[in-house]
Length: 67
Image 1 (tube, rainbow, N blue to C red):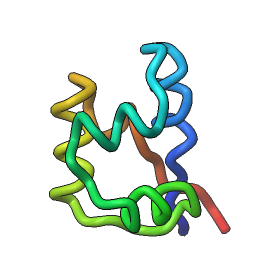
Image 2: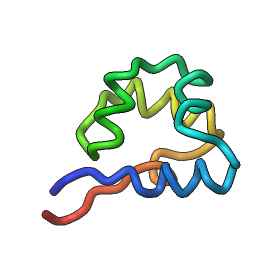
Image 3: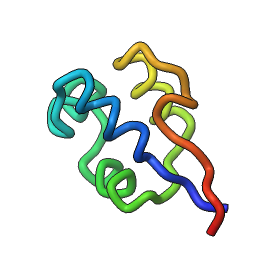
Image 4: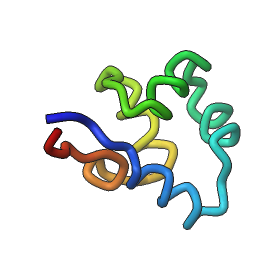
């Protein structure tokens, strides 16, 4: 199984936020944003920061997909 952050990108669109806005709001590193863009695994601490900033649950920002 692999990770997909498509839900996160859709949530950002719904909230009229850019990826740069998300990075500023959460304070996550540019390298971490690159990992998110590539659907690579990031730490649970990073996902918690994103969820807190967006007032969302982890299932709202990521999912596991086959493949």
